[in-house]
Length: 216
Image (cartoon, rainbow, N blue to C red; front, side, top):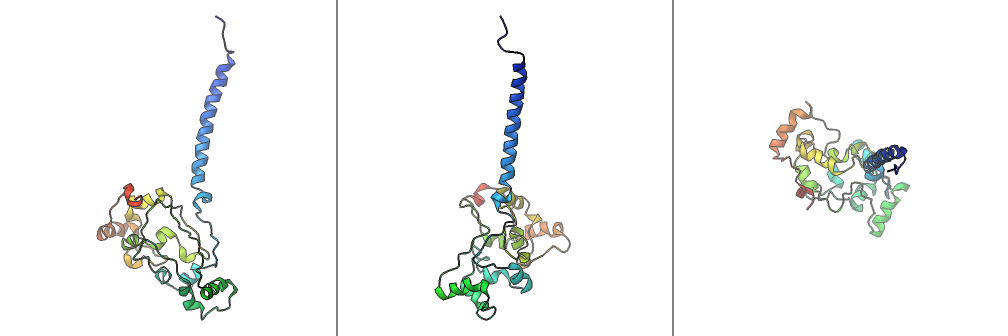
């Protein structure tokens, strides 16, 4: 019986198979890289806000505590967006004619809230409670990055599940004494390893990655 296919068909078949494998592998790598890129996660991307609020000026320069504006962070799952009244407590007396603050003054006059764009916005299927993290010694900067150095606010980290789980698996690497939760630029004097385990025990922190903790 004569040969049905030319011998070169074997070479073509092998090249096609290997090419398909490489293409699929390359496509998967590109998708994974895209998923972790700032284009998707919005990490390091400054969000445009109705007013160019500077955490660097208010926190680092003026020394205003996070809780002055984010009043519910110790008691609620939501840190709270400051109302216009909070802004006007100071800005009814200082920088009263600054052009960049006109949206704040207009909000105060009209009673219409400023529409701030949330920078750290988790998907609806993820449950997160600020208060429990604060009580367990998780500092603001642990999740939000060096906010006190941000002239304009951006998302420091990806907020992907793998990023959250890193802390849930080894909380001793991240917790700090409760009295320093809101302190900018804090570092353990003798290193994190020296205090991590003792704080985990003192605050009764359990290392857990159970799905139901965040997905309820």
